[in-house]
Amino acid sequence: MIRKILPFLIISSVHSAPILVENGDLQALIDGTAIPSAASPDKYQLPTDDQRDAFRAALEHILQGNLQSAADEAATANYDLVSYTDDNSADTFAILRERDSNQHWGGLYVIDLTPERALVVQCPHPLYDGVRVPATDIFINTHAVVYMQAGTHRNNSPTPSDCDGDLQGEAYRISDMAHAPDSLFQAAHDVIEAHFDRTVSLNLHGMADGSDDSDAVVSNGTSDVWIGNSLSRDLATRMNEIILADDANDSRYAVSHQEPGEDPNLSGSNNTLGRHTNGSSEPCMTAAVTAVFPERFIHLETDPDVRDAPASNWSFITQALNDLIPLFSDPDPGLPTGHLIITEIMPNPDQVGEGTGEYIEVFNHTGSTINMMNWLIVDDQDNQATFSGVVEPGDLFVIGVSADLNGAAPGGTPDAVWSDSVGDLTLTNTRDVISILDQNGDLVASIAYEDGDPFGAGVALEIAVGNRPLNGQSYGSDYVESLTPFGSDFGSPGLRGESQFPLPGCSLDPQRIGDEIELIFPASRAVTYTLWNSGDLSDWNEVLTEDPIIGSGSEAQFTVPQPDDDAFFYQLVHDYAAPE
Image (cartoon, rainbow, N blue to C red; front, top):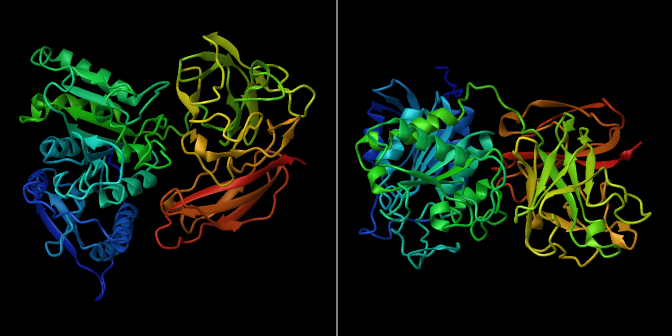
């Protein structure tokens, strides 16, 4: 099996924190880690901002391969860095383990330095849910890249969390790592997800016997609507196939897929980790409506028959993960088929009727031409319409309900007209989820909004300057009112309007810091590109702006600067202008 090797560098100096070197049985080490229970309360403490920043930096240094810098940052967070060799596999791991003195009980974090599978195993409730042993076993036997384990019982602290949702009628506690956005656990989740572009996080839980007709429940952590193909559904299907193929298990277990909108506890829609992954604007208070595509968060509930020893009870989970979660050695699939951004919608035209003036505008921010033959637009009531067209790199494409959106106004002719195939598709003026699916049923882009005309009738919603929706997904809060006259309405179908867009075919990640990036512009347009960075994917700071570049095939070069503090995340956007 080809293993991914995380490069590592150890540099020592008289001022460096020590890197502890240990060996033994990794599973026994993890399973034997002390965890305060609810019976020994109020041990958990929230990390300070400095501790959280240092911890984030330590983990990022491990993933980048600089163990000495990781040890130095870890010391600031009251953690040791342990270089640990598992006697059973001879594999080496980097472990972030809190020091015995002045403990905040922030958790245990194990990073495989030669992982095989793009999987992160998370154990937010090791005691309450009784899943520490199966979680550790799954981590080791899938050769996942990271294992995360909470440091206390979920109810150890009496202090309530500010996040929504409840546990048996009481508010979640700040010690509950599935609902603790200020915790080291959440910080680790965010750093890992930003560092790797295709890891999947498995959030393992235990449910009471009889909570569901099934013995295990798989979901993607969303609250309302699921459109298109689904890794979580595929995992549930594969688990059932494995169970039925085993004569000893075929009458014992059944696995179900918890559809979004059902029990929020079983679906994980209250989980702040999944909310962050799936693009919630406020993970503490707002559920994510649709999942990113491809799905990167799996919430798995198990009943006692599954999670209790021996390991053969949960082996079907391990096997399904090994069958479906990609290896690091697998070819990078690249962007999904479309990977478009919905940049503008007009749900409530005023000058003309909704059956004439509604439209959706999308932007191709890949470096390739996208053929949208027989694609679908679907709303949250499963009304469907088809359309076809081709959108070039860096171009906008308008899909309208009619061939004349607004009389003789500029931009009134769309690039394609949608044709109803199921029901009557309209852009609802109130709450709606509009999704675009490719010919295979894969989700390409979506927008979820609570108000279709927050700026009044006849005003289109345009993606805001500086907003960068990830994985083709956006929310109504990402949009601003159009200020461009469109007849007597306001909208800019086919034009930039108020928006900035990601540069086609260019992506940045933390490993690119210090690299020289060469850009080739595929479209013959005037472009001003701007580099932004952020420490949390919400507050963005402009780093540099270059002069406009005009003409197809024009090239530019720049060096990605070292970020300030913990601004690990970069996005490059450009000011879309009309062709010269």
